Image (cartoon, rainbow, N blue to C red; front, top):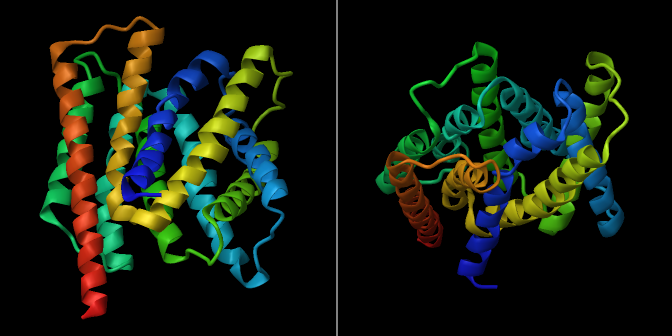
Length: 293
């Protein structure tokens, strides 16, 4: 596949993740963040594991569980907490610090060059997301704010370490390992901390199927594949597509209005995605040129 195809597949992941907020609030019961995160991760991971039929080597289990914790256990648990305690726009805006965090972690842990265009794109994207979804009557909940920020940092670390610890297996196998590990870590937490999950309704099952099969198994395969082929610095700007999708779904499904300021924010977000991907490609190319020299 061409680099453009790789980028489009990777970008489709955060675009689909933008549906998490509306699916969570409209189709899933409130008050079960750990259980919902577990039900999203573990079944999807086990299905993929049954398909690939390959277990991680024993000496790699520690790294797999660290990645599963960062990318799924911690991130998704905090994501559901933020979704319940904050308006989707606020949670998405706070989560938009992730691309900037990825850039600096890539510099520290991977030796990726800091390109000024990448930093500008990350800051501009944060501004664009703020214009897109924050309003004058926005309410802030301290616990929700902490959860959103913590989740963004957790996933940023997971993205960078996924590239650093990339094993010689296919992205599908790597996705199966991480999803299963993340779900296994969530299982005892959900059982110990939260009340018994109610009997699922058809709407609950639909929401869980979407978040697990499409929003987890398929999209994280595309995402980890993009990290392996394009590098964290290139794909991190695609994360801005998640709040953009969330706003468009709110407009299309919930009948929410869009202002001129929001349209301006959307344009800034799209330009930030393009500039960030271009800057990431430049940073990756410089590493390769340095290695050849």
